[in-house]
Image (cartoon, rainbow, N blue to C red; front, side, top):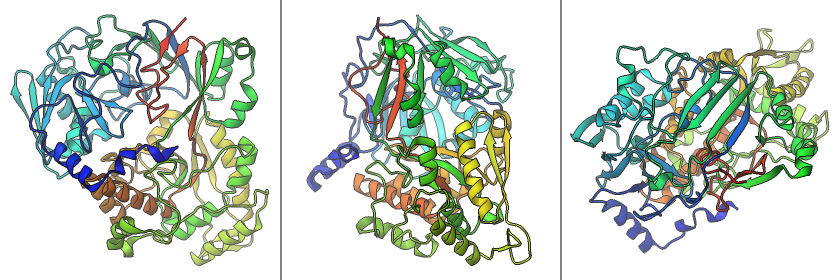
Length: 604
């Protein structure tokens, strides 16, 4: 499935030259911008290809979430807010089209302009752009939003802010960003930051978390009801300013969006069966096969949909904190991977119906290819030969067990690796040369039943080789605080990756982020090869170099043995009320942020 996403890559050299010249020749303001070449959609496009511009308005979607929340401000470091709010409360200058690998189209802005090297980007705001309270979106709001988020907002906004040399007002409705870094992606990234209302925060502490100050944005939905930690309800603004903007046609169709929260995530499916929810996304194939046969499905009131996608698998599993001495040695990390009997766990959890992740970018054209590195990938890895984890060039693969409860071969491999790293079993306990036991803490979140079940099985395997980890289960706020400060040995891990990886890679595994609290580099990667390959990705001027750099990065991360991987989801399984409908044309990203509930609609 993933082979045809980038068919446009396989064009002739002359075609590439034309593409390059087209992108470099952008001498006048445009309605959109692409990472390479030009946007697919013309200036007069009606709607995104996967949206229905004639979709009816109305209806309601109610979904369930495991955990809780103690804040309604998703733009700051403090507090835990529903993750969806980051995308639902505020709009950005441009919106991302998930029918193309990395292309943005104007939303709050009506045009974007940039130079051939993309050292700056200038936006002209739409005169009709309005916040939800009816006040106009101004250049001053834009400048304030970037500065406030970059200096006092969530850590995710810091990296871009540090790469902006200046922001200047160039007209009544125009603003220009100049960059201090050679990074072609920045011209796109500056179009994707949330724009908030400056006047709302005058005399107020922007960093204060809680419920008394809900950020005002220009998005089509507003929070109209909530109960702390229990539910949040958003209502479509009937006076939404952007309903006729081409990017928004066929989006924001539902009248109400409601999220119910459950301390025990296993209760979500029960609430769905009981009719308290009308949409549920199922990640466990065994549950999908065994439990989705209740009366509402039999009657046809609830339907089951399977949505394919062509995006990378990302990485899901259990991450090891290399900041701690016991995880600094790759042999120890490999030994712990060997001790994780995936085939047996997969049989117990899913009936062996779920494939395992093979690399960070598996399931996509960006993923590493089997066997030794070749061609451009090998060339890009060569300068870092002394820094590469073992098997990077040769091709690393995760171990496979027999699937039996006690796999002796994997146990022997794990014990041999521990011995090479200086650990042996003494009196039934894995110890170092000084007689200190090898142990670590596994941090889990309350209500995460599936991962707790996996860890219970894994712990039995560890005990067999003399290791007894400490398992700590905490609520969501404590989990957030501890993971933000890297206070764990092993914990759950999930990084969704896209077909257009860019600056976020530095936050995920860049050296600078390794010791920055709140960063997403949970494993603590500090690698010259990783940093250098990310830079190559960001500065690539051809799709070939970009793909080669990503495949090389995929090799280094996978061979680094930072995460014990579990399942990859190459499809999405969702059950929903029959009235909840999505357009026939699907984006290449499938079920992804920006698709549901964005382009869904209610059809009687």
